[in-house]
Length: 620
Image 1 (cartoon, rainbow, N blue to C red):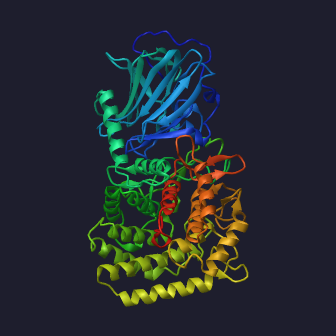
Image 2 (image 1 turned 30 degrees about the vertical axis):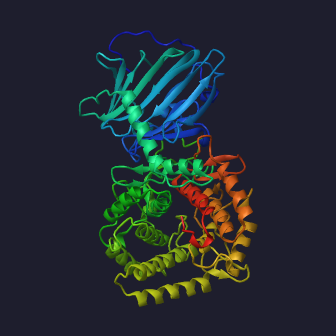
């Protein structure tokens, strides 16, 4: 219910005129969103001027805007022209996470500047509407819905200020507005006109409902400080190659997916954006996967960002502290282990894709490849001078002792299948990587350990994998021991150094993948019709798999093919340079959680590969 402290005239009854995209009922196409963030959380802003997703105060908190997974009634914040014929274009302000959306009509044009202030105690979003030409009528519509769209707050006017206070359970959100706002039904609205040279600001702030109201702050100063933060961070990028713009945008995205207080890195800021439109492959990615985070650090270190890697290494040590048998594949932002999965029945799902899930049951899975990625990140960290050469060595040896006991067991694998454990080839290869990195570091840095024993175990692993995972009839490695199915993760065999890129078995595997897993020139993870993952068949093309193929082409000296594929992948980035998890070649749309750290770290890795000698390539 909306309360007003004093009578106020309602907005006119006619339908609110909006940009053409705002007339769509329900969320936009995924590629029509951009992300803003402050290192604690992130918001998705539509090209139509609507913020359709925001979890406050943290990435994995309950959403107060959940229209992305339902309808506007589940919460959104729209600022857009009244004219339905308005045209929109947008960009990030230089090398920052400050978003600028330019709306234009025959009568005028405005610039909407959206950002989340960095370095303030207050958790806020600032939206500034600047008149650039003529005059433009604008509409503002704020629909706050706490707890993923299920709780309508109690709203009152602010005393002595233009704006409102919304309360619901533990949450309070305050809107401070540069123009009068009114209540219409369960929505807070405003209609205003901006002329050339004028500006109107809106500030939305969150805090706990039992403490005093969040203080107002100097928005101009906050904008200046936020811009300086991002520009300073971008300025430390050491990559100067031909693909600097997409590489830096990807690195900025990875930084924005980092949880500044602890050093954790979330896989994506969203949950339940489907891998197949209308399907059930909808997962919560607002957690820190050891695999994704470790590979993100490889990308960040390659770009010259050692501080982030050091913060994650400390987070890792805290998160996995305890018995190695209790290590999980993912954790919460502060290292939480209980990530219970449940469904939100009141949300219809992104464009009808249900269920909407929060939490992730895969946190209890066994995924052996995680050990390889962790050891790889620690090894690269040592070589970069990230940590003292012996620091984290006791943790690493404990991991290896445990891996020695379980490496030959079946697991759920990199794709987190829910169809039962198998002897996945990729899992075994990455277990070998864990031993290989450990042996090499022990030799290079003269660290203590049963090195001869580790060498024998590493060689035994290699022999068993080559014997059991290679299908002579297909002349290819296969998804699991004794299987005839292919899997894109097999492309990592030469990338991680398990076999040389021009080994006949690698060449045969690449040919088989090109024949059976290429769709529209991009790579499927595997054929879901096999039933391996325990879910109904059908999904998009997992973008990192295609980056892997480009990497292998580079390693095999197929440079023209590598470059052509890389350019096609870059063309899938949306207008502000963001990638989701997957791509649907039939609808020509991005699908899956967005933006996706794994896709962006692979973009960085592939781009860096074009400037490296083939013998110096590092997995990423």
